[in-house]
Structure formats: C-alpha cells, structure tokens
Image (cartoon, rainbow, N blue to C red):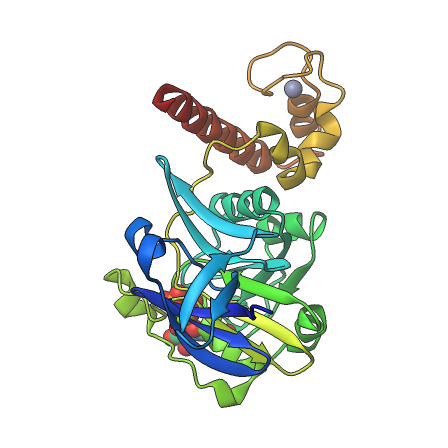
Length: 298
Ligand SMILES: Nc1nc2c(ncn2[C@@H]2O[C@H](COP(=O)(O)OP(=O)(O)OP(=O)(O)O)[C@@H](O)[C@H]2O)c(=O)[nH]1
Ligand SMILES: [Mg+2]
Ligand SMILES: [Zn+2]
C-alpha cells in the first residue's frame, strides 16, 4: 500500500513529512515540479518511500488561505481550529483585522478561537469593551505569554485537536508556544525590529504539544484578504449583527441608508456597538470588490 504522510514543512522543490512517527524529506518531480504543486503544512500526501518523491496530494478537509487579487496561498491545511492571536497593546488590538481572520476561518471550514495576549500591559485595567464584544461570539482566551497567566484554559482547548495560530507580527505567537512548551525554544523577536517590517518566524511550522495537541506557528500576516467569498458567511463572523438583521425590511439590507433597518435601530438603542456595524460594512464592501474583480477576470 502507498504510504501517506503529513506535511510538516514546505521548502523549495519539496517538503518534509511525518509518516508513522518517521520524518523524511521528499522531492517534487515531473509534472508536480513543472506545475509547482502547491503544498501547505498539514497537507496529506501519498509518497514513494524508495524514490523519496511526492505522488499525490489528498483532498483538503479545511484550509486557511490568504486570498488577494486572484492569488491564493494556503497557509495551513486540514487544521481543526484557527486561533486568531492578537494583543491588547504593542501592537494595538485591531478588530477589523480580527474580523478578517474570522472570515477566513469560516470560509475555510475552521473553528475559530481568539487569543488576546500581553494582559500585563493592561496594568490591571478592566478588559476593553472592544475585546469583550468577542466574548459573546466565540471562545476568547485573555492571557500573558510572558508570565503564563491564563494559559491553563487554552491548553485544554488545544488538547486532541490541530490548531493553526495566525495574527499580526509581534503579537506573541511564538512566545505563547514557548510558554506552553518551554523545550521548544522558538525564536521570538523585538517589536521594534518588526516595525521595520521584519518577521521573526519566517515559515509555517508543525509542532506537537503534550496532550495530543498539534499547533502550527505561522509568520505574522499583515493582510489576509477576504477573497470573493459568499457574503452570507458574514452572518457567522457577525452573529451579533445578524441577530437584528432578520428584522430589517429588506432581506439583503446592508444596514446603510435603507429604510426600516433594525441593525441601525439597534445601534441607536445602544444594543449593538456602532464599531461592529462599521466593521461589517467595510468587510462587505471588500467582498463586493473582490467578487466584481473575479467576475471580470472570467
Ligand atoms: N509585555 C509582553 N510582551 C510579550 C508577551 N508575549 C510576547 N511578548 C513580546 O512580544 C514580542 C514579539 O513576540 P513574538 O513571540 O516573537 O511574536 P510573533 O507573533 O511570533 O511574531 P512573528 O513571528 O513576527 O509573527 C517579543 O518581544 C516578546 O517578548 C506578553 O505576554 N507581554
Ligand atoms: Mg513568531
Ligand atoms: Zn438593515
């Protein structure tokens, strides 16, 4: 029977796989090399162990991808969860970026969770409302990777599943993994050097943690892009908006200038933070633009 391996690193012209607890390097040859078969960490492939070559890539169950202007890059495949990692400060908490990552999770079939790091920088202040909004929507873990405060519930959530970590450079993804597993000694960086556009982690890597957990650390992403996705996915990213939208007069209401809009009414009554509506509208405008762009390309 042809063996199956899981891709744990991708490099130029090949990849490293793990198969039955053995790690081996494989090459891409023939049509795969010519057509540049795209592989991502987490991909399952069949391979020829004698020739050390990749035969086929198996269909992906889930994917985290970056889509922009018709170019696609799969960052990780076959993961169960996407942990969006942000920080309270340095770099500052950016809801618009988080919503884009959540959309990417729903579009790729991943269960999203949110990790907000650098709790120490809050200096005992209560959690900002812009963070608390998310607690009503998905599992949120606020913690300090530096001191280990808040780690145990996250450790539980990672148990037995495969999680890909994604977020801006400098939020502390690698520091967090080092806190979960001190033996890892992943390289971490100074935020000052990141301002110059340097990323400390340079490629996605597959890491096995205790408790049968697999995590994939990724380089910081500045932009994930929405791609020309189905706008109905926004109901999953913004369930707090969708809850009111069912009462709007128009089924396809964008909650902008339409009459009898229940979402705008909810913001006026103080039942929905206006920032949530603004973020929703930005994302839907971006999706519209991407869809126009891709239909013109056809
Ligand atoms: N104050 C504070 N700083 C932290 C904490 N966690 C990480 N840092 C710092 O944040 C900086 C960036 O950490 P990294 O772990 O390299 O960030 P990253 O998200 O892996 O960055 P990329 O690999 O570039 O995507 C380092 O200087 C860390 O020491 C924390 O809980 N509190
Ligand atoms: Mg890193
Ligand atoms: Zn409306």
